[in-house]
Each structure stands twice: as C-alpha cells, then as structure tokens.
Image 1: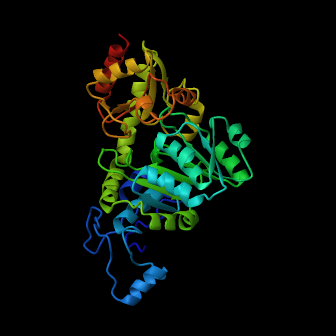
Image 2: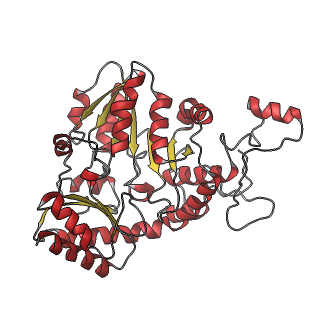
Image 3: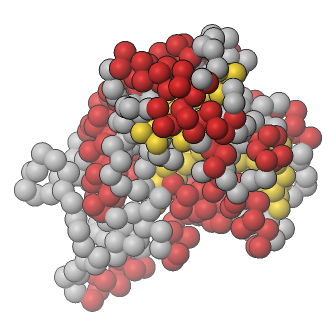
Length: 409
C-alpha cells in the first residue's frame, strides 16, 4: 500500500539503520490521513468505495496498489501495525492475524502440503502441539517431535520430505532454550524452513531472523498488547514467503485481525520497550530470590548465571526475558496452596501482561497431556509458570516468597 508518512514500511529493516527499536516502536509504519492526526487512525470498516467500476476491477486484479478491497484482505490500521512490526523485527514483510494460534496455523497450513514432514521441538504451548500432533496428520502431514536442545537431534530426524522445522525458544512453559543459529544451519542444509515462535522472547529481547530463522510468529496478545485488552497474532518473514504462502491463505480463510485490535496493539508497541525492561528486571529479581529458597526444587530462568543454558541465553537474548518457571516441593497440592496465598500476583494462563500472572501448566495449558508425557516435557505437578509484571520489585518478591512459605508448610 502507498504510504505518505516519512516512515515507510521498510524503515529500520537494514542493519545500519540509524533508528533504535524504541523509536521504531513509536513511529514506524505510521500513515496519517489528510487530517494529520497524532495518534494512528482507526478505520472501522468492512469494505471500501471505488470511484468507478474500472477502479474496482484494477484492485481485484492487483494492478492498482493504491487502495484496499475488504478488511478481511487488508485495512489501513492493520497495515500500520504490520509495517511497524516488520520494522521492529528487521523483516521485509508481516501479516497480522486474529490470534497467535491463527498465525501458527497460517504458517503451517499455508506452506505445507500432504506428504510433507515437520520436525518440532517437543516443549511447546499446548495448542501448538495440538496443531502439529493432531491437526496436520488429518491433511497427510507428519511431525517428528524431538529434544530440540541438542542440534544433532534435528539432523538425525531429517527425512527426504522434511520441509519445515518448528520451535519455541524460550519455550512455553519451561523457558527451555534452543540454539537457533545451529538449528537454522541444519534446516538450511536440508532445504527446510525454520519457523520460530518468539512469543516469550519478544522482538526486543531476541531477533530470530537475525539468528537465521526464516519465519517468526507472535501472539501479540501477550507482550505486544501487554495490558490484557485484546487478541492478535503475527507472521513475519520475507516478502516472497508472505506473498507466495501466506497472503492468499489469510485472504480466503479469514483469520483477520480487527482494525480496533490493531490500533490497541499499535498503542501497546509504544510502551513495549519500557515494559519489557521493567518486567525483565522483575523476573530476574524473582528468579534470584527464589533460587535456594526452601521448598523450591528448581527455578528455570534463562537469565540466571547458573542456568544450564545460560551460554545460549547470552548469545541469543538481550535479557533473560519476563517469564520464569519454578518447581515446588509437594506437587499439585503445594502449587495450589501457593496460588491461594498470593495477594498481588494473579492466577491466569496469560503472560506478558502488566500484571504479574501465574498458572499451573499441568492443570491448564498442558492439561490434556498424560502425566508421563508431561514428565518428558519437564512439566511436573509442582511446576508453576510465573510472568513478571510492572509492580514494585520488593512488593512482588515479597508476595511470591510469602506464597512459597505457605505452600511448603
């Protein structure tokens, strides 16, 4: 689409861009109407009017790039959000979706076909696992799940028909890390596409494309909104990939992002750098305070110096992120006592919010897995996923430590 703003869709996509992420998060992709509004305009419309039949024909043929057809295909507010995210990610193109899972499904169903093979890390959000393990086989697409932390496992799982690698790093809910450059190299040698879900990482903590990934997906519902207001998702990659595999899939299947949600997410991006910095500090404070605390069997946080994957975290991430996992002695009963004792932290299966949130994966996001399957994933009955918010560090740490004491009594 045409942009009359000095901030074009590819602003900041070059590595030598003089603008920093904080600036891009506020300005990139802005396309003001003739009224010159300060805040991005919300175009709440399903359709668009053409000056004549010839103009409508040209737009449907794709020979007129100056306008829109239907908000399921594209919308000015949604385009601004897409362009801003592409600039933040340093990518050629982005397409927004109604949810993060719509983005994951869109990449997989838009790119793969019957007879293809996927290799995936086994520690995944429950819905991602469902798509790979249960939905894709209905269309003749098989997935091999591996321990993705060992690069050799990716190589060993290769088949002649392997077309795609899929991973989360950090993974939800264990915060497990995968060496993205090493995995990208194996995928490239095999001619496979590497897709990284970066929902826990955010574009400000980790940039998978610069690490070698081909496609990045996001649940914009999480950090990008960051205030519990709306749903959204993103597919980010090369212009060729988006045009060839994603554009028509989204156009004809309809997982479109609401223009109002796109506007809310644009507002969320303006404060994303400030929120991520504070949340990461709070997460580190929590992880440090919990380490060695009686009643805690294990704390998993990429930013801890003694994390077994700390070296990978230093190479791939700017901070340890905003989410940690802790394992309580005493299993499910202790985890539930922990939840009851909290005063500040709220119980919710979301993460990346301004409010600190905790969930018990074994009974929520990964409830459908059998106990033995959860054990393989590293999700015990005493495990909790804790998302650090914007509260005062001392208040937050105090609340969590009080809950631990109540849990282990």
